[in-house]
Length: 442
Ligand code: ADP
Ligand code: MG
Image 1 (cartoon, rainbow, N blue to C red):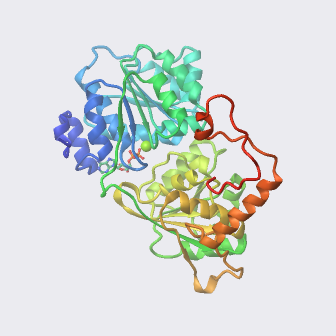
Image 2 (image 1 turned 90 degrees about the vertical axis):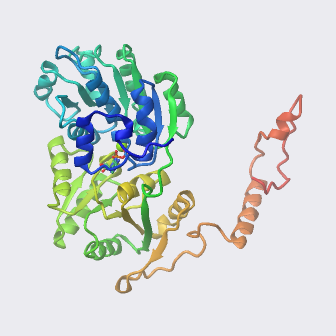
Image 3 (image 1 turned 90 degrees about the horizontal axis):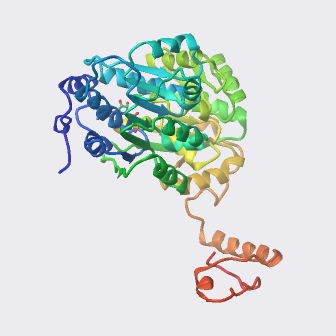
């Protein structure tokens, strides 16, 4: 039986009420699948695409547990949530506060960029839920300012990102420090790759593994286009033109480097477009302010680097712009995932210079979705489009040519020892592959 309403999940009235106030009418796929085993106290290894409601999938059972087993005296945190970035920690805490609005539960954050003085109260007052980034938390654990012994549930959000960012060791240390806990929940956009599986095995105890396939209505509807540009000046002109379209109500513009953030912001401001920006070196107060200005609707363009934008959930982003193309297809997916959240439509626009063509081809093959070329009449590129590289599949002619050059290259290369199934099956010593034999199957 699939769960279709929140009341079927047997959540407390106070939680059901805040869900209703938040306008969450029914659980998303990951929520419907992860909440029941989590409520039973099982460990959960959960994955679902970005924007499909993973936060509430772990917050609801965690809060429900605190309501089911209230403690008599106040004390240190019972639920510890780890996130890869400060912004995400704040957003998770905000969502927890909203969900816990009609309860007496206390929620706090511990992240870098905040003075110890502000955390002192976290340590002196009652805390039920703490949302933290690993670096600062570890520091407080080492200084014996943070008491891990009351932690009953450890939750890892965006585990894939945390591993990418090199936090595996930190998390394992925190896992060891909270070894008295009864439950661990790990959520991630993907569970692909050995690293995360390995990691999960060390941290979790006989988890229920859930890979939620989001319902059609939750799936993103992101239209993807690209415009060819001659150079950075041309890209800027395109960006300005596009940002001025009335349907662009809230946009995130991605650039590759921190310096570029300031350049682009300058150009936009000169053109009379109010922007906010995020980059890794901003002090925390500034970062919060930048996000707040966008969330409040005071500005509708946010310029950001990938690192600075990680994990941020700004609702209703109508357009994502790749001012600089991302270096990997995975980053592309993360970027465009900023728009089209929770079943809303979104548009992702890439500005592509000649040197980005190969990259674009790779991305098109990776996302397996059409990314269509567009032009603006008065801003047509003067350079010619590359003929084959951009298509999802290379033409026969190109393939033939590729095989030809590959073989040529091969003939010039030193012979490489290549392990094939049929070679290793040959008991005894392996045949030496011959370099002269063209191997089209490679
Ligand atoms: P994820 O962590 O999977 O990327 P989030 O938890 O950030 O996704 O949720 C994405 C958006 O969907 C948020 O704006 C959140 O408020 C909204 N959302 C979450 N659950 C529901 C629900 N059951 N119904 C409607 N909207 C939801
Ligand atoms: Mg999330």
